[in-house]
Image (cartoon, rainbow, N blue to C red; front, top):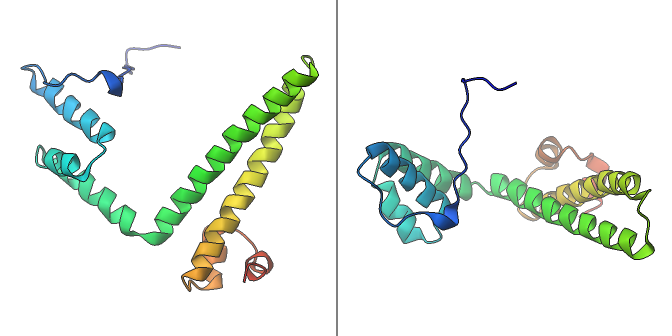
Length: 156
């Protein structure tokens, strides 16, 4: 059900104009989009001088990137998402090669569920392995990853 409470806008980062128009709201939006698209530290620093909100956001991003546990959890999640995408592509390619059109949906759903579980477990184990290498207590690793102590001890 659509109402007038919400607006949805699609913004393409590749099509950002070089200069904003005279509207200050347009300029502010353009600065945020440039921050999202930025690829260099210099560009981020330049954008952080534009507004207080962007400066605070850049500061928080730097703080989060310095936190090793947060970064490891993020990296494990990224690894999981990449594994899931590859598994899905392989499952579809194999099903097409065998000509299985009817059972494809069921098989894909089962494969996704299994792949998701395997990828998540692999990601958690990788995070736990890195945390062990950094000397983080096993009880903290159990709390963060949700793995049991036996699995973590098997990594040593």
